Amino acid sequence: MVVSRCLLLALVTLVFSIPTFAISQLETSVDRNPAVEKEYLVLTISADDDVKTGDLDTSPLLKDFIVGRTSVSRSTQIVNFDSRKQTRWQILLAPKHAGTILIPSLRVGGVESTPIELSVVAAGSQPQQMRNLFIRTSLSTEEAYVGQLIIYKVKLFLAVDLQRGLLSAPNLDGAQIKQLGEDVDTTEIFNGRRYRVIERTYGIIADQPGELTIDGTGFSGDVLVQGSRRGGMFSFNESRPMEARAAKSILLINPIPNEYHGEWLVSDLVALSEDWPEETQEYRVGNPITRTIKLLAANTDETSLVDIVIPVPQGLKTYPEKPVRKTFLRDKQMVSQLTQTLAIVPTRAGEYTLPAITVPWWNPHTKRQEQATLPARTITVIASDVAEVNLSQITNTSATNTADYWPWLSLIFATLWLATLALWKKSIGQVKQLTVNQADSVSPLNMTHAVTSNENVQRHASPVLTAKQGTSLSTLEAACNEGNPGKVLTMLQAHYAEQYSRSMSLADIAGLSFELNQAISRLQISAFSKQQTPVDYQMVIEAVKSSKNNKIQQRTSTLVDLNPK
Image (cartoon, rainbow, N blue to C red; front, top):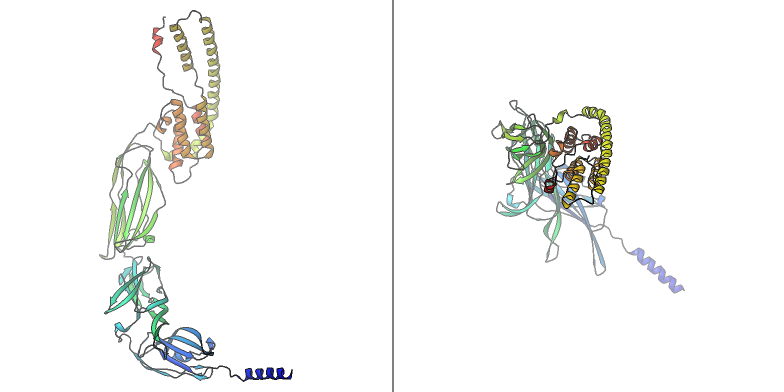
């Protein structure tokens, strides 16, 4: 028992007698000497222990340097049960001026680093081929107008392997900026050295005249550089932070010229074109004509395109759709396009001239106003079987007036229908009685005469809907209840095609009565108009029920002429 206690006491004493690890040295180095004024270099500080990040005070560097991003890494090595720890800081420094600058000693845990004397050369004096990372920018023009698209291209040149990085957008006030397309990754020979080049394109539109200052694009990231471990024969790639920034650019933005007239549009080239659905120049009243007009502008943003004003003469109604805008690249140039589609509905027959369409624009190269023109077009509209109707005169007031006399017309038609039905039943009875009385003495020719007489009676009787016709009317009423004008027009043609046993156009149906003419006109307005136009569907049903049934005359049998008188 005594021996055990002695062993335990010896172990505890041994543990507390082992010295604790503490930082003993602080090493500093730079990745280049001499350095270039206002260009970043990397200051590396290594401590032989695991210490906190905040233990290193970098404030003494602010006197002569611009201090950039700081990265910290830690490592542990164990050799023959001997543990070694290391903490390393990498600090981006940019000298503020040329000359000889002293990197002061830094302190960590009571240990100071050795100062470093740094030679700094003036900016631009270093040979270009010695630089591993830099940015170059270019502008499409040094002078522009308000609203003009300015192309700003950024090229990041890399002679080292990029591990990670961020290319920030330029800063500017009084203008809109957005990236155009995706980054382009290529290689390029510059001053006899091969570089990896990452190219990015921005579009800038100035909102106000004056000087426009563009703060250069900045890059911040980590690159892989070749390094060697002390005491080793092999080299390894090390990650090193790097930063770069492009120079500022200044543009002169001109105001809108006083001599310009019209809605402002500045572009390198503007053109107008149109599409027609068919080659013929003759169209029918009531049939819509689809017209598509395109406005194209080179080196212009799609938001800068003006709306197209499309005039039409009297006798034509237009129903435009919402304009469609898009931007695309053509021959390495940005092209914006505005597409305007509209339906033109003729309301009267005649010859019409669609006026020329003109879009004014400003040419920044010639510094004068120009215009894109679409020539006039002449079309011929022929009359249809439908009576000419002025679509603009059909209002809800006329519908109200029509509804005032509909109850009286319905009463009159109902009375006539009942009277006709009674006469039809009476005539059927007389035919049956006549057939019974002459059954024994009739010859085959007389039998034919009797059948023919029966057909004539049915032909002169009032029309009665068959089961098939009743079905089509029910389908028409169901379409009216849905409130779909296009479907109602289709069912109207199907209903009258069954009644007349032939194909019926809307023009044929509208010619049957004034009420049907008005009903079809209202349905067409509601179907083609961009705005929802109310339709009295009950009036449509009543117009169908009260229309005349002018059926095609059936051919009389030739056997009738053979009947003896």
